[in-house]
Length: 246
Image (cartoon, rainbow, N blue to C red; front, side):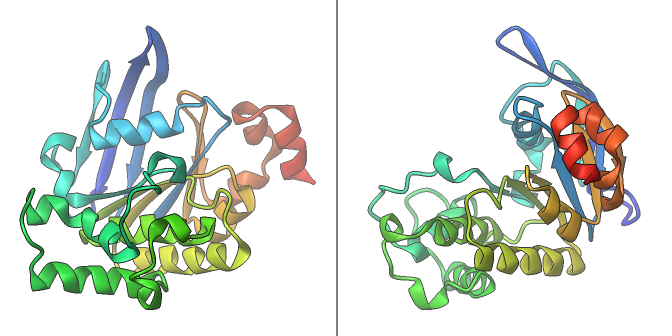
């Protein structure tokens, strides 16, 4: 793939769930070295679009390409940070073990981790500031620590594309600042990041570009788009548009 081409391309993506369109005719690109924020109201299709990129939901139309490959052939290129409630925090495992699970595809099922796998885990833990807590059971972690575990787990596979589903929801200010800085450094290192978020302020600070989604992309541009009441009205409705303009 040409380095100037987008790492992620979603072309006229259409997803139907329960007999109803969840995402319609959506076009989206993410280049290496950028963090694209995906914002929209509840039920707008943000998480569904991430799952379509992962190949976890079938497309009713359009296509997704990751470095020129369809999702089923590009899973080794993608790291995914789900919403925290989707992870089994009651599983009897420590932080290092949870992060190591992000390398299952590389290690193989029921095989022992290699020195390279252990090194990747340690590097991921260092990046999220959890190296000193590597042996702490995940059931004892705070919300912010759990979010950092999920980010480290995704980074352990050294992905080219990182998908982040609401990473700032319910985390404390120090964790949000750490993640803001980390995501910026990952983009500077040439990673492509796609992040869903409800946090307009965090998106304005962190994202190099934003897209407003309400089943389809209704507007796209720089972070200054979030201060445009007309575009926010199209995506979110009156209350959020007024708040953005204030």
